Length: 448
Image: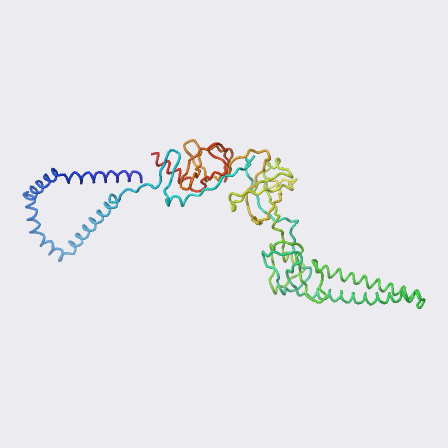
């Protein structure tokens, strides 16, 4: 429709300029002057002038006295103004000059063209050709590198040292708890230690006295028995207090329990707040610490494709939130049973996440990597367009210059397409990933 309008405007301006040149010629000007003189002296024109001279004062008087006549005059004048505006908008402006030029399979835009703001391009990279369709995958924490931390006694939280998301090292304080149970256990341990120390000294003296034959052997045996019992009681009290302080050493100078991190990692869950009462039988852990540098990828593979995946294989995992990036995960477990409801086999793979780009519970797609697979160029589906029966992409040859290139699609899934490299397209070429349809539409309109 825009192209037809431009053609009409060009024709109108050509007609108007030709008409003005024709009217400015001397011959035509003389004819026009003679014609105007005849029109001026024409009887019909004379009668019209007389009619207007006689009736115009009556119309003015009627306009002042009649409301209906006044409305008719305003309606007629408004309609005339509306027609003038419509005609001016339709034919008054000059045709827009295109800001791009098409030469065979290339399209170039002028610097600053508005179309360029809608076009994005990315360099191509080689990727192994997939052997099958991708399957859903999700990221999970590595249970072997995750530690839930709970309290084995009743008490009240006094101070929270670590917050959700904090990075902690092994031995760092997490929370301080005021607990009567811990105070009782600490007192029992200190009493048992003092009693064992006293009876150890008595046993040592008995041994010296027995050597000098100053006491009977029976008294020595009683001292030894008392020491062994006191020492066992001290060990029992120590094991009790260390059970309440699973990580680190109990502090004899403090009657408050401080829970510490058993492993380095990130606080993935913190189910506490100062002043909260805790119980030894509560199900939710107070903290969960996990190493986010090493994660699991859980894949629910259909039973038709699960047979081709084995321990040691490599999975290629992609995520919508990280476009253009592919992560490698090593398969460490293939479930020996099939989910009776989903009819899928759960596969677990280990994933290195040293740069912390991935987070637990992220969803993506996984494909089996074939070490002998053919290398192809991977592009998003938004980069593909059609030219008749051919599939094409647009390559940015230089800023503002794009070349349309026919390609052969070797494999395609719901987000990506793999195309065969050839002389016209190769790795590191910048292909248009956003705005390919805009470029294709410009080619289509120029061909009409």
